[in-house]
Image 1 (cartoon, helix red, strand yellow):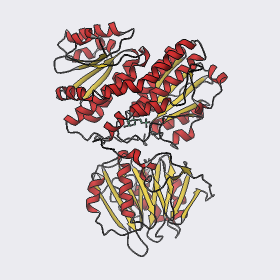
Image 2 (cartoon, helix red, strand yellow):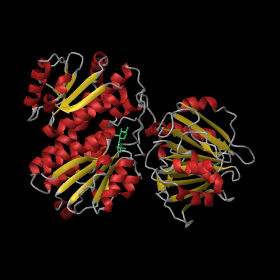
Image 3 (cartoon, protein in one colour):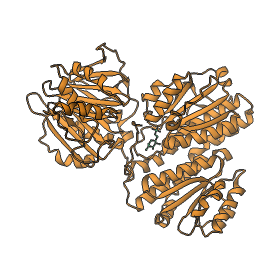
Image 4 (spheres, protein in one colour):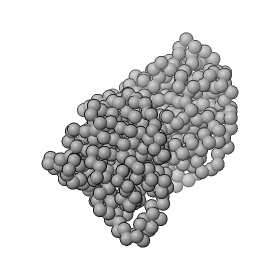
Length: 608
Ligand code: G6P
């Protein structure tokens, strides 16, 4: 949430910052700004409401400067306008800052400063940081930032410039990610690696409580007491081309299509046909430890939570271990019971979601063993968990998550399989599941090959204002995910519900202007779902169904049907979700929405 970028070197800083911000735009996109300088000249600060392309319009080619900082905002305090956009300056303009996070005591600090005559320009919580740094400036920016940080309550990733110290950026992190990029006679700072990938593959990840000083010559990492911290330079495993659109109109479309390859990657080296089981090395757990697990709790937010719901259902069904999924924002504040024989899984594509990170820390404080399931390598959750698994889906740029969801499912299936094989699942059954899992990428390709059919459905149905997405069992969370996708990017209201539960409320919404999208696999609950479809039809409801090839009964009842290939009955979530992703995508296109950057959302929610 909010993107930060900084640069010190010989290049035109404005270009590096604008390029970096473009890459970070998925973190927030309501306003943006940069401040650049060079030795002996004044800072040049440009910011405005709108996207990076709007900012680019006011940054002329003649903006000189070889160091600077930039920011793309997702508003928390103060409306979206030019003044509240970052960077923010101190009263004299000597100090310039960008900030990601929330300063919880900013009103208190602001009131104190106002009493001594300060006049603030913006409504943000961030501006107070620049004012405090100016007030306490000792002639040494590093030292001053160290002195000011203890006054701040809340979360921050910040980058600071001072006019008296050209060519230097001081950064600090507490709760909001910051990473350094190490170049040759140039240094970068960013809230995530996508901003710097075009320039360097050498990264240094800051931890909470750490500060850094950057110049073109190099960097120094230290803590609030000025103790030097030796950090490891790590190689960024992603390639620049992975964050390009590669001929697709939108990142979301590209990422939906990438699922054939990303699921294959998630399975790679993790399924063993000889022993008919799965293997997740990163869990850091010996088989006998896994055997002692009595309960699994999955903690996540948004789309990751929906993957977690399916994971929990599956672990309970296949491995016969009691399992549940919890919203991280809720778990954190409910004083959860943490037990030694419970395995906690924290699921997060970005590895930075604040609620999920804080929930993880709470469970760890209570002595729980927490494993992370993340996509972004080197992310905070990946580094702070007690073991875990990477999704290896490659960078996910579209705000609406798609390929990360199916990779999260892939990991849960491998996990459930291995837990089940350690208990009662036979070699034959284990092998049958592995063989079915291996066919999934081809099945998904067949669905993608028929994307035009879903496009037709979207052309017909995007005119409705309300939708119900309905499924049962493992496919109930898929219905929730399908509804979330439609809401997120098309702004059509949709509810994901258990098809069985509609009798207890949502059926009151059914009429000929509220279509229902039913997920109908050929599993044990198929006949029940068909009964639910008939209940809707009897009330004049329009019916779209995603059903299994050859299911003529469903085709006869539904107004429209999309067929998916047949698979093992526990694997349908993979095949059910892809049509719902495409449906949301094409509805959003029909409605002219900003698919990759839907209003009010951000990819990575690093504030509570
Ligand atoms: C935001 C994103 C969603 C994502 C959720 C959880 O709301 O817009 O796409 O599912 O955060 O993110 P995480 O990175 O923790 O999976």
